[in-house]
Length: 198
Image (tube, rainbow, N blue to C red; front, side, top):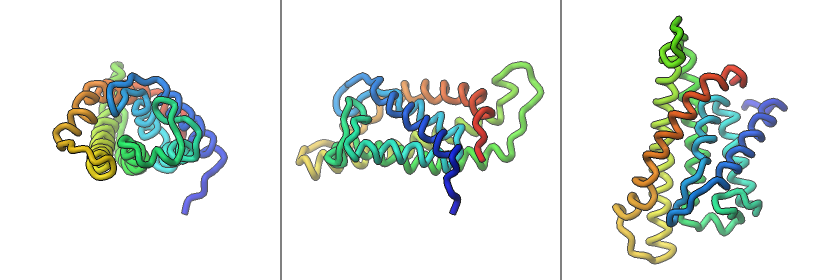
């Protein structure tokens, strides 16, 4: 099993802090607020590698459960586990490891083309990020919406349909998620070389 180096811990801690900051930049619109968390999470997934991305997201969730108010809206504590939105936090961790592994694997076979246009020159790299970003988004919503549905209907005894859950916890966020994914992709082109993945 790979040990965490000092550099791993330092870089992961930096991104944990960024994710926490992203949670405070939020727009409350019902049960699930709009935040910048996913922007910094995708940056972690695209640039850190699976070990650091896992560490950054896991530490963020753990310190929040321990009571430090780093979740959206300044929330935290073990009671948040029964919050309807906690499934998204679980998905952050699972998705970070899986999709960062996809990025690592994809970039092993990526060549930068000789083109003056940034997007053209990094076309293969961007395609890897796009694939990983889509997978990450699917994981977040698959776990997050399922948890949201179960907590609302089973724990809180509300009669909420799956369509209503999708409307509340997914549809309204997709345009913003796409924008954040594109921004993360473009930033990662410059950021990734500065952060060695291994």
